[in-house]
Length: 602
Picture 1 (cartoon, one colour):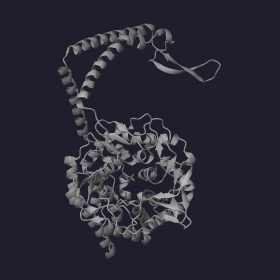
Picture 2 (picture 1 turned 90 degrees about the horizontal axis):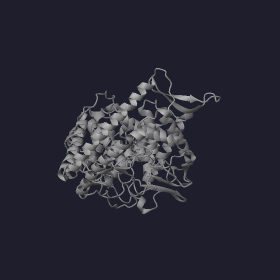
Picture 3 (picture 1 turned 30 degrees about the horizontal axis):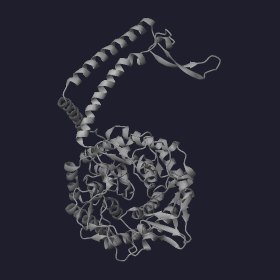
Picture 4 (picture 1 turned 60 degrees about the vertical axis):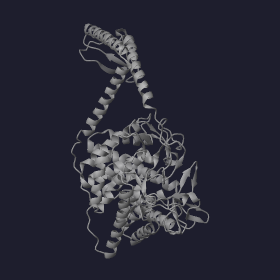
């Protein structure tokens, strides 16, 4: 969850998928290819220079000249009798024919000289041994590496840090509230301390096995995802010794020049978002530097025909690809649509507009596209620029795209009207086609699949209650009251999904079919992995309404997590929330520290 002062941290999570890393060719084979590549470059340069004069020198017979005493300019040609209609482009030369011929001769002489130079270089290259060629290749590689190091060490421009509100508050006067806050802080300490002992430097923790854990979204490297993701929670809770431990690890160990394929989306929200939040809270320059270094590694993911980024990118090679299961190689709306806030901040902090341009290009492309029933499908092919399967959800695959539109508007001090319009248009379509009320009176958000509504709501979609409340102010036609009410109804539905289980913790998704309401039906949907979305919605409802029920619901969830998810080595998700004797999944997710406990502590 993201506090209003820390908007860049936000982002919903998609369930991890177990896809293996790609294989890479042997070094020697790569070296042989490099040698052949250099020889091919030499030969191609030779051929190009030989024929360059025929194809690239201007032909004076094809241009109409006007002696106007001007440098070369392009002007529209107006066809006689057709008004001002542009029918072609004419190249105007000046100031005289003699100068033009001299320029042509100069260009011919230059091409001849370049041709002779390239020919001599080619002869010299062909005389060298394999060892000499290999040494030259290695020299060039070392030169590139050195240039990259110099660029990474280049100091970033100094920019003012925004004044953050609400990050240094005092203790509440109410003893009960103070005790509850201390309990949440103790839970954070238990999660962090055990990660510090058993999983330090690993991405996540297996609290029962008491060892490090990772999934393919982080690649094959130990990148300390929990450390980076949890930094702002540690700082806000006043756990400054723990914060400094995390900072030291980042200074000494966090390295992005690794041969590892990572999720662009997950690395953006957990690493870049976490590093930027830590920088804004503490002012420590190392967090900004690391965020920029990682962002540069993600930029090659945008090298697609449409500019829609790949889902995965190799941090070393820059090679990108999409998930094999994602609708014929499509990119995912919630992934490429959840980059905007972090990338806008990167441009602000570095003075480099490239990050801003990348995400604005995505927005412009989406605005041009037709949307079935005004809805954004979850899949978009980065090669063709066409929608994939017509599947729309406010839960997994779609969720944080809508959240980021709203928060882009808020982050701009409500001046990004384009983002607000896209959000309002999307919410209107969602209300019309996805939001329904069950027979039992519960308001839920279904999923649109191939022309019909599936009456199923995911835990991830429960964040929308808070989103509707956050977006109430500034809504169209003065509908603030309507969206406050809608947010409260979604919160009640999600609370029911918790209350109707044995553990008082919510399932991954729940149905509204016939007599079944707010209950998971399939075994594969009955798990709880320490997710924050329901508690996040309670937090927003409490902040905007101060209705005490939302604090009570949040505390109920905290007690259930403490009772059923706490183990001696940390906190673990559970496999079946309807079983009174649950089995643990033995994973302490990084977002449990970054979001779930932060929401409780707020």
